[in-house]
Each structure stands twice: as C-alpha cells, then as structure tokens.
Image (cartoon, rainbow, N blue to C red; front, side):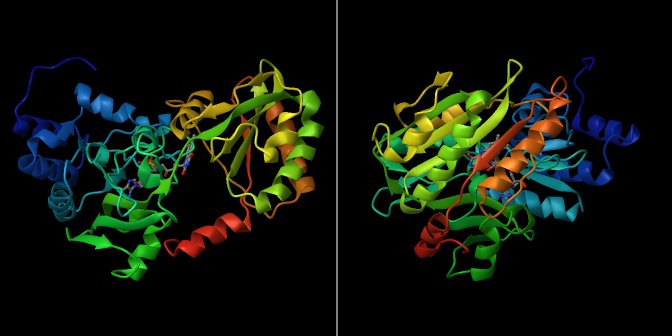
Length: 378
Ligand SMILES: Cc1cc2nc3c(=O)[nH]c(=O)nc-3n(C[C@H](O)[C@H](O)[C@H](O)COP(=O)(O)OP(=O)(O)OC[C@H]3O[C@@H](n4cnc5c(N)ncnc54)[C@H](O)[C@@H]3O)c2cc1C
C-alpha cells in the first residue's frame, strides 16, 4: 500500500465512506470509541494495525481487515466501548490469545475488532490457591511465572494458546461485560446459567470476558518430551498404545498425544508424552519408549519447557490451517482403520499440503475428577 500524507480524523471517515471500504456503522463505532480512548484504537495502514493482524495464529484470521482494532486496558473501557458498538449497530469480533484455528473464529472482515491483548494481568493468591488472569495472556509466559512459585494451572499443552481458550472445568469465576455494558462477576452461585454457558460453551456469544479466575495446583516439575518412530514400527506403536490406554485408567499423571505425519517422504509418528511429576521414565510409558526411535527428547523439564517444545515442533503459525475433530468411543481396531484411511487419502496430495493425524485419549476418570471439583459442567 502506498504511503499517504497524514489525514485528520474527519478526512479518514469521509474517505472510508467515499470508497465504500467500510460501512457507516463501523466507522461510527470506531470513531465513537476513539473519541473516548484515542490511544486504544488502531486504524488500518498503520504498523500497529499490521502487528495486530499478525498476532493471530492462523493465516485465514490474519488476512481479515477490520475497520479498527480496539485494545482496551481495563474492563471499564470494554464496557464503554460495547455500548458504542451496540449503539452503532455494528458487527464485531473478540480476540483473546488469537489461537483459534477457525476462519473468523476471533477475527472479522470490515467490522469492529475487540483485541484483548492488553488485558494481561496475572494476580496469584497463594492463600486461596487461585489465579486471576487477563484474556490477553498466553500459557507459555503464565506457566513460567506459576512454576517459579511451585504452582501450576490446568492449561495449554502448546505455549502459544491463549488463556480464554481453556474455558472449562478449572475455572472458578469470570468477570464479564454484557452487551448493555454491565460488568458482572459470574460464578456457579451468583449466575448459575451464565456460568454454565461460559464453561466451554464459547464466551463469544454471551459477553466479553475481561478476567478469568482459575484453580491453582501444587507443582514440582515434570517429565516429558517426545520420541519419533518410523512407519516400519507402527504395529508395535499401536500395541503399546492399546496397553497405555488401559493402564491410563489407573494413572492420573500421564498424558500423551500421538501425531502422525510425513517427514522427508516417509510416515513417522511423534509421541508427545507428559508426566505430572519429576519422575524419570514413568512405568506407563515403558512400552511406548522401548520401540526403536529415530529421535528422542524425553527428559525431566518444566511444564513451560514442554509446552514450548510442542509449540516449536508443531509450528504452523501464520500458515493456512484447518482442523477437523472426530470423537469416538475407544476401539483400537477402529482407530487403526481411521489412520489407514487418512494415510491413503492424504498420500495423493502430500506434495501440496502438510497433513497430520493426532490421537488423544480421555478416560472417564479424567472427566469425573473435574466433576468432583464442582467447578465444571460434567
Ligand atoms: C495448534 C493448536 C494447538 C492447540 N493446543 C491447545 C492446548 O494445548 N490446550 C488447549 O486447551 N487448547 C489448545 N488448542 C485449542 C485452543 O484452546 C482454542 O483454539 C482456543 O479457542 C484458543 O483460545 P485463544 O484465546 O488463544 O483464541 P482466540 O482466537 O482469541 O479465541 C477463541 C474463541 O474465544 C473467543 N474469545 C476469546 N477471548 C474471549 C473473551 N475474552 N471473551 C469472550 N470471548 C472470547 C473468541 O471470540 C473465539 O471465538 C490448540 C489449538 C491449536 C490450533
């Protein structure tokens, strides 16, 4: 885009309307909010605007061009802004960590963009074992701070994911701004229905969350990392995985993702393992670890170190990504068939796309543990 001489605000408004770039409604919303909080509104063609676009994880979100980004620093600013946006009858989107893989998940073309990256407070109460955190915080930086105090929260396996994404069973309460500008603190006693919808239901449809209060847990280190196995040994991997899933019923510290993908023209599987204690080579992973491997990073480390590794190894930030999920009752034969089908179907296109087939296992015990705490929906 060619550089142009600086314009007054009125000139800009006239130009946007004249070229039909943005609707009157969105220009009115951006202007009204900019009149209240000039330093918080970022307009097109500035370096701050491009920076805000590039802070999305997925390319399809980065390519969206809102009329403005609004980057509030307090819940009160969010409240005043939503009143103006509603008054202008303007379409808007909300971005927390910006990691949604869905096109338009947290971005909008030609609309008003709430960008909550500056709501990034982190307040730890060691006495209550709770954490108040802003929706602009990413797990990677948060985990490091918690670890330094011997604490942790249930959160992202990937350091780049934003805190709002994990709106489920470990959340005690939310500070939220409703469409009429009201500021509420929501928990299961004060607003049981709203509390329920906010636990994994997508806060997007119910208000703008300005702070989340999470439960904290004691923490003293982890074991984990990954090893990578060649296709020649996949039979052994499936056998070991089947044994792992049955051992997992009695084990609440272990976690595993298997990630199948093409590497230098051959299929491999990266087994990302995590164990929530500083214990080398936990018994539950013995079968999976005894298979010959071509790469191995398993070690004692911190949660933040493992989350960073996951972010770096699976890095496709800024590319065009799409995710599809299938949830099913565990059946190793069905799982293997799904894998075979996926491998056959994707082979013909491997010169054009990078494919991955990820396997996660959730046990009833995991679900029940969350239910026992009384903060979740199950
Ligand atoms: C490669 C990859 C790895 C992932 N790894 C993990 C993982 O390890 N653990 C995990 O839990 N999840 C993981 N996820 C899923 C992730 O949690 C979701 O994509 C999540 O929605 C991202 O949250 P965010 O705040 O970063 O994203 P955003 O894109 O900012 O927001 C996601 C959704 O929440 C809404 N929203 C965000 N903030 C607010 C707010 N303050 N108020 C109201 N609505 C809001 C947005 O409008 C949007 O609909 C992963 C996703 C990908 C693509």
